[in-house]
Image (cartoon, rainbow, N blue to C red; front, side, top):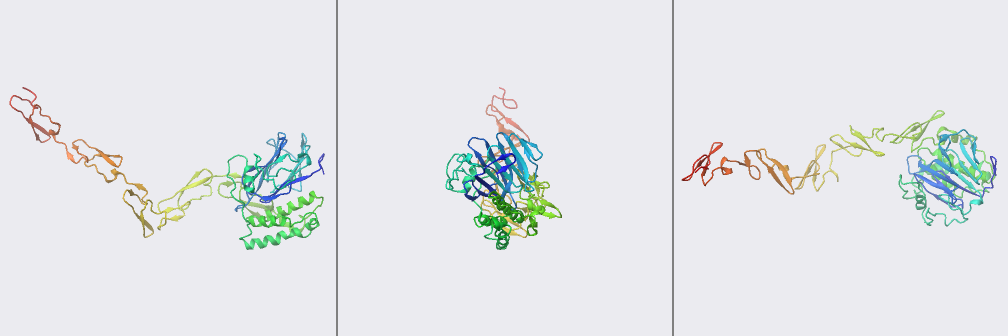
Length: 464
């Protein structure tokens, strides 16, 4: 195969297509819907490494390729859906050629990278990636594309060379960094519980068995996973099924091209939808695409903004809190502080009825008109019995005494003129024992009078 100024004899092809379906260099097929950046392929000599960045495509569980990064001997090429090509962080004009690397457009919106190191990378500008190598890399590769050793039963090897059985375990092991969560399961067939979409998908994907695609069916059987992947994608892409349908056609076309069978189909009237504005999946981060004449409009999910929903916005920008609730950013999400009488994550519910979370700590709930009332058990208080009763709550200190909680009890600091555990007693002038030498004290108004024994005199009987 002659590409640019290089003559490369392609022996093996790895593909990541649709949402996404992988086919390794050794031909093993599997599905993995990650929402992070992953090592798609790299060689053991660190000559090249290809990273795939995936994100939600639509508002279901499906994910699709958003961007790829190709590192060839230190030259970093960045390709993102709907954006310009970057080489080492700078925009470049195509065709581009430097240090054994050629980059050019192909098939209208795709990008093809050819090299002098027996490597070709093709990105069709939407969801599909193809990595092509010669036999010089046999047994020297790793990543989501497998190890290229001629065997299909040992493809799922982690970066630590441990063989695992599940695609999700294998896929998660090649994640870059810990900024996003692992995938827990492979989504079951989305057509299973969507009969209307399933029937539509079956009808539309059957085009792979008809002209002009049928001229390739002897060399590449469309029933060998291609129609199944197509139906899966059309059902999964609830918001923009045409993009997923057209990408399935494009993936089959590319593999036929590799076999030397050229298929021309996009110019045909029955495939005109594949040239429409939304067919290129211009909306990112789960945004919904709507066609407006020859252009498109993206309706972004909460937390994203921009023409293509490509920018992170404030989670509060969509005003998620209802009924006067106040929104506050909390990481990539939000928290609503509700006005009195409302509750729920978005303050969408009236505090009007008893449920399992109305009264806490064993409180008994009763409906009272449009609200409710909690009867709290001993030791608790508050509208929902959410507060612990403290010893000072009952106001045990009298006559202006200040109460302090001391363990399960209380202590009163009495105002001047009072005493006792609860400051309930008035302090008398004689309480301090002002009369000396066994003089007898008598209260006289706010003062005192001492009756001195024989031989003593003075106000306090202090004189002989």
